[in-house]
Image (cartoon, rainbow, N blue to C red; front, side, top):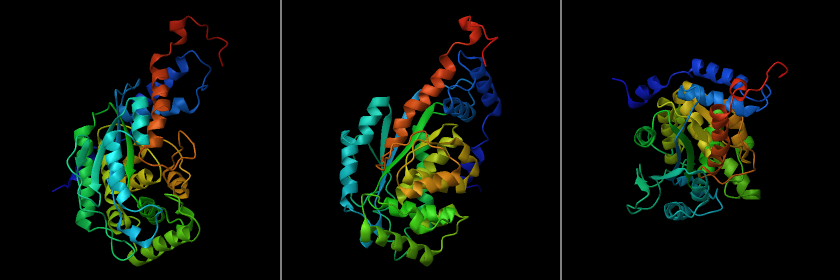
Length: 354
């Protein structure tokens, strides 16, 4: 009997090449020199292929912010204590975080989800409780989660996609919150790509010097201890991942199955995308890198996935902030494709247009 992941994987088809060809042909008819809108043209064509609409009109903007804590913070790898995760979740609910400000700017709905915060958060308007357990285990000592927990957080993300996303009409931004999650994400990037731990480990919440060196050493020793299978995304997630990361991987799978573009944020979101692509390679074509983080592992992950970021603003906040910022550019690309006049409609001569 097929599992939910199997069913989701089977629902993720290739891009609609007919819609992409029609979009490309329309770009060439619009009142501008050929190719003059650069990557805006290719981005809109990708969205056309994702949605199956030659002139894509996506009416909903949705930013997921999944939260979870990490047992590995016991190793002194973060500049902040773990209880900041729960405090920031309350800030998201109240609308006071960066992601809330940016979401209001672009008209995006923010969905805040407790996937594994190490606190018993009360039921509140604006918060979905999908807790797998109170934080992962310390992967410096043991696997971050059981195989069953790894599967559960991915499936929870897929269910979130099913209930929150409108087929073919939603811009899906992946965001997160979790003290210690750059440590887990760097471990995932190293495990999937084979890159050296020192190359993919960055400052995260602002660590430097001996603490940064300690962070890299913790990741290196954990990978040597657990030896995650680079070809098995669930094995990597269970051994060195996080509940919010697994949930994001599930959302990415579910969004692709519903033919919606997934706009990735930074390192943690892209680590989740590496796992999602590992589970369903066809997902790769549904991904758009919202920005390039200054976290070194993010560049490695983007290169591995073959993604070129929309923005490069030296961000490293998380929360989905860079992904939401990119929505304005992405929507501009689609609006230009849809609303610009053709040469014929504008009565502009084309004989001398290059």
